[in-house]
Length: 341
Image (cartoon, rainbow, N blue to C red; front, side, top):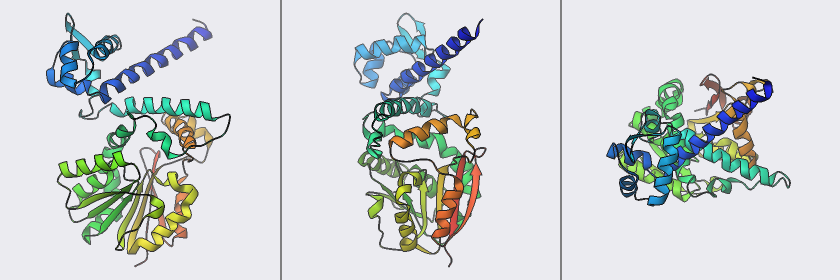
């Protein structure tokens, strides 16, 4: 096999992988995987009724999902989930859902970057909300991707959380999305109270529903609002930004203002960000390639990923002593700092 044939084979495999993720996205966002798990096996007609979706679309999806190994045919026109299809259920342990959502989200940003490149326009955060099927899944995607890392590694390693809990303090999450960071924080630390802020109304509605479902309504609240106008009535013990600081980096003076005006003496700032490497060569590692692509998507939104030392400098400017901790083989950085008491 010549070099050209090898390249063609590799590209074809990539194209087939992308098509399977696109099909999985349709199944995720329309509840088809979950519905078929309930039914165990079903015709397209029964699946369409269970999921409340159009039969014609469900029939074509079943054919394609069968072709790509997401479904198996157990009898004539009767389908069941394969192990791969079952793994895409959002409720499955270790769900593959983030890969499906991320693939379609990436395609959306690729199309927008392609069209915007001639002019250099950078439309901002609104790009995320341009596809109505994507925005509601952004928070769940992040929760499924990073929730276990947060609970198993970050929470035990960062002293701020236990200290704030010990004093029954208030934690604020700026850019809270569906509230997963605060919900998991409050579930682990029962004396801590949480306030989340996000600008997207669908995120707020989703967060409130999940907070109520998890019995955290008495300790965790979320508010819709602009970070630039953030205010609370009391000094807070923890100000956190979970993969959101790069969204407001061009206005980091406002972040400094928030820390100075709202962080109580002895309070903590904790910023969690993807760790942009110092050397470009690091981006060629397979584990870092997604970060390189995501940074292009961030450019569309007017952002860029940050090096941990850049974040540490901001905390130092706010009078905090920064500490950088790396997780996930150095791909994730948590930079924290405590205000002098």
